[in-house]
Length: 158
Image (tube, one colour):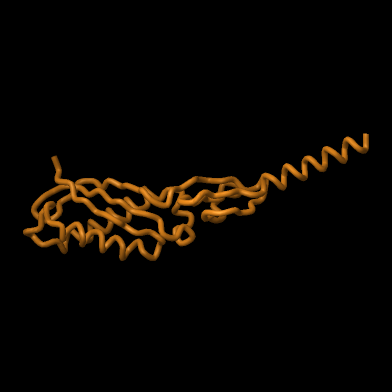
């Protein structure tokens, strides 16, 4: 009976040890939650987590994010924008990783609202300078959060 209890204790210890390590694949970041609250971000590689306490919150790809912005007046035309962004530093982004697309959409909408006052009256959606100005403004705002807008495409309202 004692041997059986020792064997079960050894198996339980081995199982806890095996579940305490996670491997995050390249090109992803994972958020870790403890008791439902954000604790930390795991970057690609092997990491130790507390078994039974820590849960993986979300698997977030670092590249390939696309956000559509709602239509608004920009210059003499009205329309929206398609933003393509990537996560450069998931540690700086932190807890925002759990809802990064919505967070960027909100931030970009605020940036566009402030930029509509500064847009030249003759600017239109065919103007690549306007798309570059939007991209530059968003990179200025999001750069310190570990994010980078790689492309901004303006879409005329249909």
